[in-house]
Length: 495
Image (cartoon, rainbow, N blue to C red; front, side, top):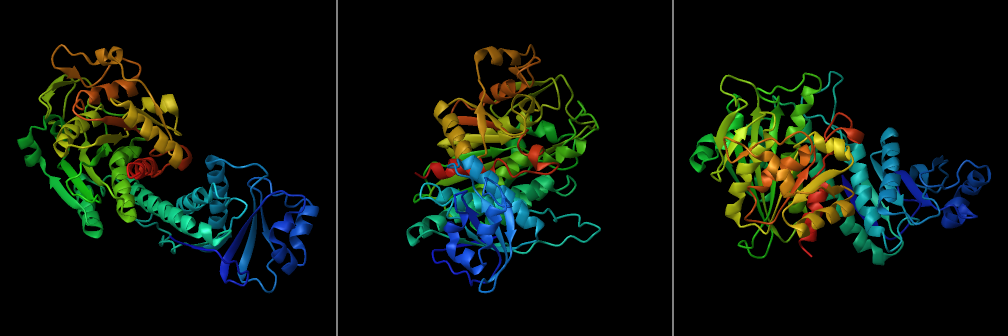
């Protein structure tokens, strides 16, 4: 997707579609008197006949007159109240979906009715994301029997009120475009079938990203992890013929390469059958999405690199499959983590935390300023928060607050759940330092409590995205979350 911004307005400009945002004034046509004149008063007649009221989200096609370079014109109503960011995004999403249905791949947007000085940045950024979401099509593999082909690059031109807004609009559109590119990468990785997107495939994609965006990439194999004592992580991969990988991507954007990085640790279960504690067959195919935490790390680092954020970032991705096999973990097994803490495995389907705990311990070597782990960790978070909001917990309230603020700014929302000693007691084991599963209830919280035992040496927060990474409004496909909240969090660290 390509987005540009222009201050001058020329109705003779050639464009597939001209979109004009209007408020429901007494005379709607007064907002674009020149176009109303060119159309012989068509805009005024649409209002008088009741066909277009300019209510929020109202859309109507306008006949294209001579002297206008557009192939088609859409009038977009924005209502008479000042819209908040959520409402702006809803209007732009509806518009993007309409453009998709019209098979429009190039458009010019006159959004003055939305582009007041307080939100030209909001409009530009979220237009880019809305168009990206609407245009996204998964075509990687396998190709449809109908012969899917890649969409053309969408080209958008923003008309601004004046030249003073032009720079802001361009910068905001670039941010939205970078986040959209990160989301697209995360969606592609998440949507890939498990027989394609394996731990080895994720490792190859990390190397590819490293070459294209100047990242330092290191991939640890099972022998490397065994030498580090990652008994917890390696116990998960024992039931799979696909070897586990620990993927490390370093982005150096700060003035000093030695500046402490912000770390993102993403769960990379490329397929999760539950192991010996086998999941029900229904919807098990969706367990290819259990690596969406790692996909969001890929996406956030890509977005950061495209924006050239002046900070250092390290992404750590523990990746494996979780399958039943004669060598697989058994309920009651005890394994030793890299930290030296022993873990009793009460349920082999609580495997994500077994990967993450060793990855978190490994991350300590980078002496990070903050650590965020991202994981499709528990179905319990969907019960608590649905598909709209991620769960967030941590050992540092400032980090948690910063994440929540980033979610509100990016519209990729998160809500805090508590970590308290009363929940940690549920992880007590008679045979190890702790169990990998708590007693029934508060499953999202006890999962975070488990991880907290491996994060005592740094400032840490945990994002449970099991409800937001796929499903819900996204349907049976990856949503690209948590790329927006992570990218916004990283952008905020640059202020």
